[in-house]
Image (cartoon, rainbow, N blue to C red):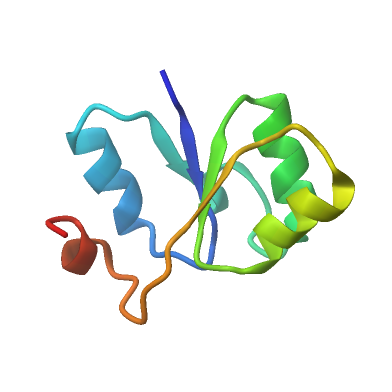
Length: 89
């Protein structure tokens, strides 16, 4: 099963949405320093086998530049990043 780590660029309410639908998820602030660099978040996600959910463009770029095979990154491309707005989309 895919496990998600929600980046600080998205509200913690995303975790509740994913858990409601049976997807394991944690918000980065519950497992790491909110001021951690993107590289730290990516390393944690790779080591803990999580996919990064983010609104931040840097994660995809970082993954491409490092040519790493993971972790996977899902980028939310919307002006309104509130979970309740996008949940039914």
